[in-house]
Image (cartoon, rainbow, N blue to C red; front, side):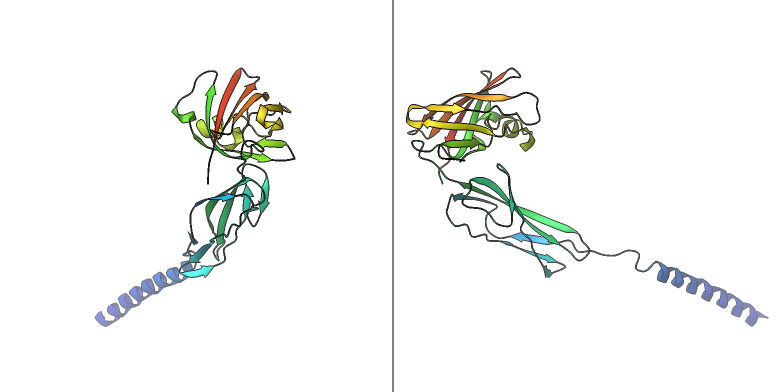
Length: 248
């Protein structure tokens, strides 16, 4: 009788063990390890390029679990609308090169290089260029609105120019609200730079805020490499902007 009891107990334990194994087999494959893309950018994260000068993209490499994977490089223009796969060195802009890689499970990773392409004018024949910006609003300013990086002026015609921000980056850079609060599409016509003879318009918006703004005056100092202009916003604010050209 003891032998029979021992056999019954052994069979019961075996069933429990096999049942446990069966559960493990049933759950196997429901969880999975994925290796996210690891992207290494070659060269500097920020690059300055004189307009028309060749830019050789140092590129980036990507791996997943130690194995190389493909990197794509979509490029967007931040100040002025642009999209492509390369930086256009013939057009002034701030370009973002987004090095992107996707692993076998569809998970993506990316790193970004910023490339400033600018034609720096001599402020005698051209006012285009890349500038730091200091802004006084309604007579008041502070350190956060001083030497802000950056405002760009690009040439759009024989004597016409567009500013990346018609209030000098006050809300975008100074307040840190971001690009949705840039005063885009501010345009200037240079009738005679040497005599500070400019025309302005049309009116432009101040980002996501209501109302419109216009530039009312502009003074260029070629010796100091500065431009000062005044913008009036119909919401009760006047911005006096001083731009200092960045040399590179």
